[in-house]
Length: 508
Ligand code: NAD
Image (cartoon, rainbow, N blue to C red; front, side, top):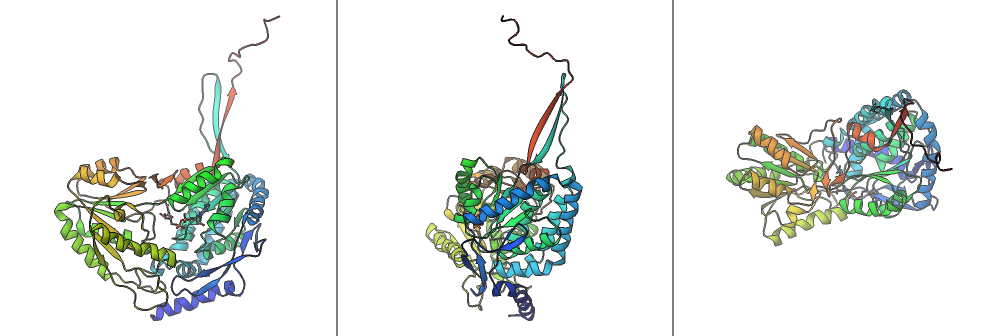
């Protein structure tokens, strides 16, 4: 272990010490709260399997307590002037920034995500809070739609207490992306973080409270998806669910929440194509392809996990890809040099590794990078490249969610688009070409929610983020987020002269 990794570990251990002496609790009505049933579960490090402490395991009762707190706090929070909500949310952003290093190190240790990427986790989380804080004063704004006989105007009002359910891949950044707009809109929130990465959700609750967010406005209940998560999606006081996770979980949530007719927003899985045409700037394309699949351990919804390469350049591009894969620095996530860290959990490691034999059985070529040589836990997956694949293979169709890239050849533009679209998912697509007309044609024809042309995924907060098909329902970002957390109301006021049909007048 390098000196820097050792010092990061010592500091992370320091931050986590308090979660070792007593369980990490829920956050309900402005304070830490144990589960009604006093159950806990163990949270283990992806690095060495060591215990990071015990976590309160929430059940339906705990969700009910949190939903009640969110319900009680709702009237006051929705009536708080938008300018004041803006001020409080900026204070939350300031407090996140003050504790950025703590958040980054805890996140890295809890998830196995390399610190070189997680060092931005808090900064991006704070940016999410600031962006949506600035929208708080105008969330009620609507349209004026005058008609001949009526003045019509629309307004928006917060939908009520909402549930936010998040996954483990980049939990802090991702949850702020959901929670900040809900709070800006005037909703109160119950957050159910992923059971494999609970730590930074607890930090956010504490930080927000210390920054002045009123009690009950933001609550956190830890626990399993099938119990705590399910109870949240079924609770009648919760008016909407913003969910990020697997497509199959999205289906389950849709069924669970049907009896209470909840509004749903889903950000689900992906198997995102990156199309590399033979006229592209291949060096930049190579950088982007490698970054978009092997950064964040490949545990990234928008990862470019399927590279479609024009046949005329396929062999050369795959060679260069393989060289990069073999040179990736795999190691301790707390080491700033590390590019690929361990998978989050042994169950996920087994799933990701299983695709190596799937690839071999399907007849693809398996190119593997180095494995980590030290570390007692066995959560490292050698960065992997599958070449010689066809689009119908499981390795080209299924979301693996690890540092694994599948390469498929295409002949021409039509073939590229057909292969890109021949899949259940539709989250993101990446296009590399020097031909401007082709860039626009392909962007138009891809069945995905987001296209990046000659670029890796660079997020711009005002733009819509989300997927088509099995990748999601709804969009985040800009006003799309605010729209999800608000109800639109139209008010029609007569000028006083329009005719009103008279009934019961001439019948006697
Ligand atoms: P997951 O669906 O297993 O779990 C996500 C969350 O849902 C967890 O908090 C879990 O406890 C909860 N959950 C599970 N079952 C539930 C149920 N029946 N009712 C309510 N809640 C339930 O996903 P994961 O394995 O944690 O995360 C990886 C997935 O997330 C990948 O598919 C990835 O593509 C997706 N993801 C999508 C985006 C996006 O923006 N589209 C972003 C990040 C991750």
